Amino acid sequence: MVKVAVVKKMDNGDVEYKVLNDMDTDMRWLKLSIIFMFVAVLCPLFLKNISVISVYIVAGLLAAIGIGIFVCLVLRSHSLGKAEEKLVINIINNVVARDAEARKVKMLKVKFCSDCLDSYGTIDEEYVLALLDNETVLKYPIRQLKRKDERYNHKLVVRKCEVCENDEQKKQILRKSMISKVAGSPLFVSLMTWIVIAFILGFGVGFMYLFVKYVHGVENVILLFVSILGLLAFVPLYELADKRLPHNHFCDGIRNLLRIPLGILSLTKLMMPFLTIMVIMVLMFAYSFLPVFGIVYLVEFAGYNITMEGKLFLFLTIPLIIATHCSDYIRGFILRMSPFRENDHHYHLFMRELVRFVYTKGNLNFIVYASYFLFLFISTFKSIQSGESLLSEDIDMVVAKSFLVFIACTNMLDRKKSSNLAGSALLTLFIKMMIAHDDEEWRMKRKSHQLEV
Image (tube, rainbow, N blue to C red; front, side, top):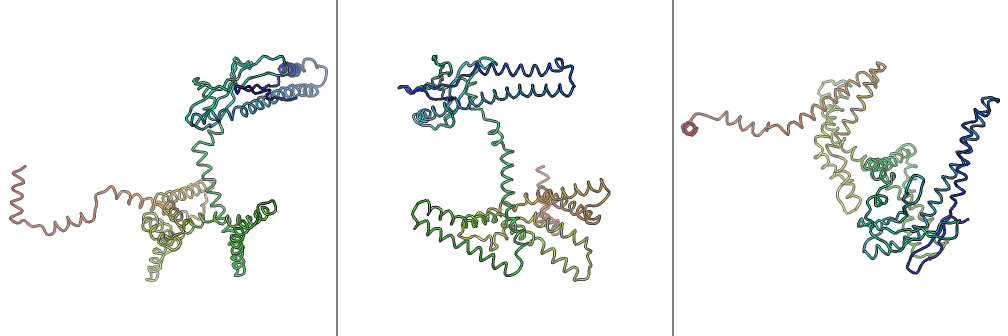
């Protein structure tokens, strides 16, 4: 039997439709469901002479039958409501679109609404709300019709609309669903953003892992480059086939086959952000590490022996200080390097923007502090929990001292900006103090100053 159906369309644009009316049948099944659950509760009183397990089995079966009947009624009612809502929205969509066009606005969404008088579901008013992009809400009434057909409820969707002024009714279409609220929340957006970033970087990490694991000899390198060149050969081949071949099922299948190598080739673009960040990190540490390495080498060459722990402390501390507090200069050097040197390619522009965005003093400070925090937290917890060091007692001490020196240097350089200890001003005072002498001109200025005071 049809659940919902359009009966006829009126000349004035109104549409009559019918909805299956099984209220009497539903009430009989609901009463039966209640009886089953009530009998299940009274089973221990009626079945005293049989075992306890048998009583519970019978009661459980009766309760399951009653609950199953109730669940089926709920699902059936929900399905009928959804079918009616879908039919009404299909009826009214074109009407709303024309009304919105007449008002020179666009339709955003349409919602079928049914207000109830009481908790028993007695319908008070039914209508359709339409939200326009100027935040106007249009209301299309739905009227109950009296017909002799008792198997169906007949209703009329009124073509003529009015602007809805009832705030409670407007909330039904203006209120966002829970899914929309969650999807639009800053936390969810931020989480999805970082998931996408992690996926792109993870793709690059996976490719580099496969490259390091499987590409070793010259033959493997040659095979890799030949494969890439083979994929590149499909670019002009696809363009030629797309121009020359006619549009039919067979030729479109050929086009789709030629798109597969192009799709594989396009995946290589996912590696560009990861490779760009890797090059940034390598160049950044090269500019900050190599000077320290050169000084340590010259010191040892001069005869002063530096222990392994001392070297670790120097290489952990000083390069990070240089990379952080000289970030503007090092970033300028990196941007002048060949991978990031400005040219006519469009993607180079975004590579340079990525360098400026990623490599800043604030970002590097955050990464260093977060790394030290995780290391110190884990090593401290392990030391307290088991009395053991994370790596070794000496290395853990070196890392902790390195972090303290980094914090002290960072605070010192930041405090310097708020101090008035300028070298040029201090040197000027030193020179003036050394060349000053009590001549006649100075005495006259002194006397005049005292008279003014």
